[in-house]
Amino acid sequence: MNAAVLAVIGITCLFVGYRFYSKFIAEKIYQLDPSYETPAHSMRDDIDYIPTKRIVLWGHHFTAVAGAAPIIGPGIAVIWGWLPAFIWVIVGTMFFAGVHDFGSVWASVRNQARSIGSLTGDVVSPRASTLFMIVIFLLLLMVNAVFAVTISNALQATPSAVIPAWSAVFVAVIIGLVFFKLHVPITWPTIVGTLFLYVLIYVGELVPIELPARALGIAPGAQWIVILFLYAAIASMLPLWLLLQPRGYIGGIQLFIGLGLLYGGVLIAHPPIVAPAFNPDVPASAPPMVPLLFVTIACGAISGFHGLVGSGTTSKQLNTEPDARFIGYLGSAGEGSLALVAIIAATAGFATLGDWQTMYSEYNGAGVAVAAFVEGGAQIASNGLGLPLGFMQTLLAVMLVLFAGTTMDTGVRLQRYIVQEWGSIYNIAPLRNGHVATLVAVSCCLALAFGAGGADGTGGMIIWPLFGTTNQLLAGLILLVISVILVKLGRPARYTLIPMVFVTTMAFFSALYELWHFYTDGNYLLVFIDLLIVVAAVFVMLEASSAFMRERRAAAATAAAAS
Image (cartoon, rainbow, N blue to C red; front, side):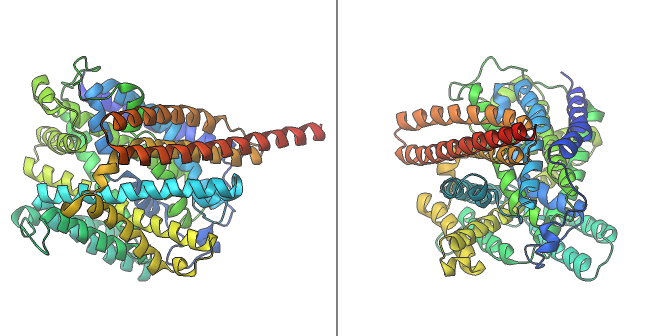
């Protein structure tokens, strides 16, 4: 199979999904209103609520939801063959993720930009909201703790990425000040900032940075984790326009350039896909493809984390309601394109089938996926475009760190929002304070990182096996809540219900498989946490289903009375 053909088919499908299907959803289902005053205007405080140009918000939203997951998930899933991964990414993006992400932004905007967990209290029941927010908090805990490890590993593996990755923070702050305070048009700050970052990639290759072997009694990996959480705590308290928005925007620019180089290399070099469409020699350590494929590839097909970002930060910045389609659905399409090129890099970036089989001889998870993307993608771009291999490896590593860093920034901010919401719900005054809530959020992350992982700070990896199923259960719950809202409004709900039934079913059976696997391995901590998440999700699902049927009966009764 020629990788260029696969790329053209995939990108065409994603374009058709945005051009036609998202237009139908926007006009007939969510019925976007350009005259509706969004919370960014009605609740504006220039810290969390601020109306934002849609291209800037798209960049923030995309990099916040993407992180490393659309690279890692497909990079793992190709162990079953490239075809199942390709089909799930394309179908999932077009009919699952687009509707889910778009809908979470729309539902939040229509309800004072409240998070989906808080909104559940009104739409379903207060009890469902409490359980839902526990699941959300645990998911964010996993994301933040694990992405800190992912960034730490990337910075250690590619020391040349340290200077350009951290310089992006300063570039973002300057762009934020120039754009939002000095009101300079965005074009020139974008061009200058982007060129500066690419100059710094060469500087990074000349001056690689490595932390000392021991500092404060901990190794370099743990040092990076502490630094990252200190940074995330500060970043989560800064006004959105000062760092998070411009950092996400500049990260989005890196996405366009990175994807352009990767797809350009594919279209010019026409590398063959050396991996099998269906792998007949799956390692014994790999779990069954069904249902695990559908939770291994989450970001890039559908991900509950996107709903948290859409209803947590994006909805507070939406300038006009129609922008929700551009940011929500097109953001999903952008992530689908990243997942697609990750599949290509992990299957066509190898010289021979034997090389690929050596890389995928064991089910090793994220480490293999990241290596396959960076090495395979760099090889494809180098062969097709003639770029230096080392430069491309540094560029892709920087892109990975920028995405993961923005996701971590957003994740800590979302955790702060949840703690503050708990403070309001349960009338605990200290928790309503942003500084206290941030301290609670970061302390929980560090407690997991170092409490469960010891001095190396990798505790998040211990509960990471729960992420896939938790994330997809969350996506199903979000789709069900959106369905209840649609029924209340008298609109068709099948476009959210069908994806909800599929993704929830796959996630539930995956959770049962993993529960048995944890039990037979004697990993009783994961058994307990998995049970807690599954039971909470089931109760929320039952409450939401009851609310859905109640609203459906009420709508039918109203229609009968009117006739």
